Image 1 (tube, rainbow, N blue to C red):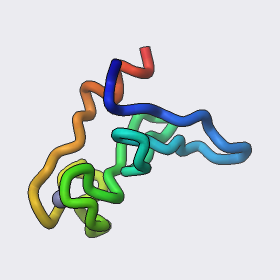
Image 2 (cartoon, protein in one colour; image 1 turned 30 degrees about the vertical axis):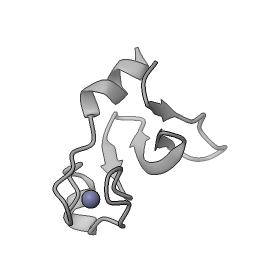
Image 3 (tube, rainbow, N blue to C red; image 1 turned 90 degrees about the vertical axis):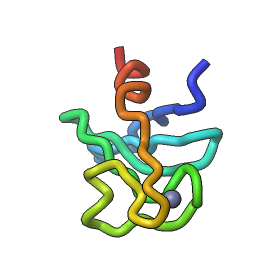
Image 4 (cartoon, rainbow, N blue to C red; image 1 turned 90 degrees about the horizontal axis):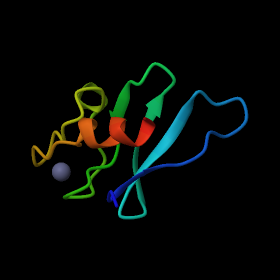
Length: 73
Ligand SMILES: [Zn+2]
């Protein structure tokens, strides 16, 4: 089983929360854009410019977009 999970969408939200080991780390939108808000490694909050890149600005950790998109299929 993946360490990542996608939570069900809240009403009127087009983003769903993405978790890693049960911790909220970011989101996935209806067009499959993935954002990394809180680093899965150093747990610091990411800079907005790095959110869409999926990479932590502090430590360089990458969110595994491929793994997350697999959960969608
Ligand atoms: Zn980090």
